[in-house]
Length: 197
Length: 56
Image 1 (cartoon, rainbow over the protein chains, first blue to last red):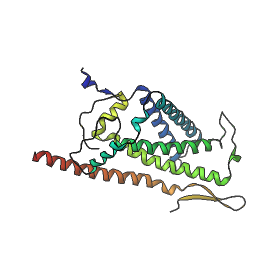
Image 2: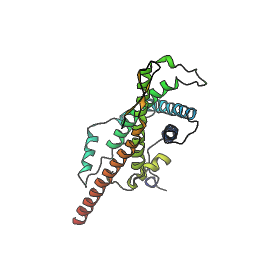
Image 3: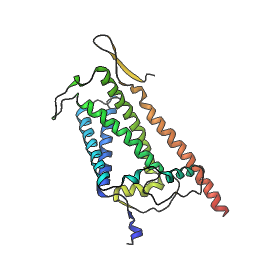
Image 4: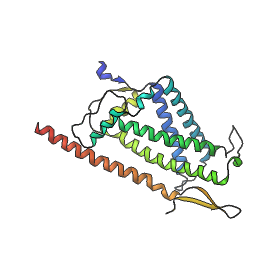
């Protein structure tokens, strides 16, 4: 099999592992949070905070990888990315292929990063109100009004995460993105076509 | 439709306790709107691209 058939390396094993561990943790967090709200009752609290800790650990792992093995510049927004906006009106537009990520991918990454960091920060505070193997609950840490703000922030973050998850699911399942989805499984990227997204 | 949930404290104060779950439909509808707009733009661009290619 030739190199062009195999494809170029895109995601290392550690990054793929991070992506899928984070995905499972997010899905567990979303389902354990929202199923009881829509009437499916079960003991969800322990599963939720444990999944939250797995999510936090996966994000810390990702940050460590960003500063030791990956390039933060790959995800930095720059002037070239803005030319991707031409794709909205120009049917003949061909995106620059000298970058790892395009404008949409970068905007999505930073958007979801803000939402997840907010969820983790508020989630860790909320966990301090629970008895866990690591600590006893301490509701007096914040005032009732402050706890209300923490819960509200966590709730808005969770709603935003549902929105972003649905968009991610849609864009990753588009036929023209099938190669990108495959690269998140197999690690190698072999674009069959270069079409608008 | 309420955006936030409140309860009364033991002293009768109105306490914020979180987001109202009446908002749960919003992310689904918002995502559906973005997807529909994207599908329309994508279809129009593909049609235009096909026309340009067939003219050449």
